[in-house]
Length: 497
Image (cartoon, helix red, strand yellow):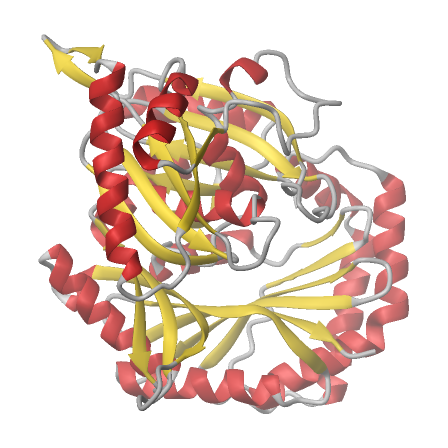
């Protein structure tokens, strides 16, 4: 999917429009295409930032669907082994832990989690692997304001460690079990993440960068001084990781806007005695359509590119913001992509009373709307930065015609499984030519947080055992509103043939 990644700090705003260009070959990074990029500086004036972002959005070259990496938010991220419990209980513990670390109340923190497998030691009970991110909700909202006002549709939010997670998922090691450390070096801030097989093991924000401020002007640190500081931080992180992870870190990968970042390779290899690689090359990037000027700044734009192509499995977009964004989309059905993706917006039914006949009526009405509104389809595709192609629309209509009964069954299961209080906000069915997958967003509202979480847990459990869905393609993502009474869910399932 084509998407825009925005890497935003108080001193820079890097913007990249990119998409995956194919499947990853064994031992090689997943390739992706970069369509457009931009860099905005002098961010002391939010009106200027909004105006420049609006010019990018209105120009049509950048997809309006964005993921954002926020440097200037208070955040916490950690890998934990927690006693077996329901995901809702684990999320409550993570929220409380994040709030404690950040010095906030639980209701002021947005939390996102990724669940791994179970691990155990002889004589001990199995524990669940949990990687969680937490950040101040108000900080996030403040940073998103100029982006939303510019006309972009915010699909997800992460922190620098989450952006490094995206980068690690794009560049998974060739050998299973290898552990790699990723570092992003900025002028005054940096970030460190350690990953294995796509799993976050360790993450840390660093309140220093490659330069120091002198009379308001950044002055780069001496290379050896910077190498010593970074090596010390890495050794400390490796030692901490060794307490609970058997494999050693085998490689360090560097990115960021540091000039001549490759000069750190030799001194770090000397100090750490492991492989060090800088991501200032075009490895993993499709060079056939590369915009002029991107190659020279590939390292600077790595984080923005990564979250555009492979968003991290944790999303810190506050639920209230997501609900507003969904409402603004309204009823819109768009044929998109060569695989004839079909987007159904705002099926707003919140009870379990919808029957199969009702589901089929909804599908037929949606099809009529799609056929009757080609102008809206064109507008929606243009808004997302994708040129209009009538053949794509015809392919989408044909797919709709052949898959109508299957989609009716999907809607029937969703409607009959949802308890009162669960509202289906949107549904997206996508085909790769042979298999179909369904992604949807839903919101649950209850009297209190515990009730809402239990309702959503039952919903996910019922879908996982339904005769329509084969398996969950990725772990469901939950986001909880500040008052705990609303839970938003995003999930993707494969549809049985």
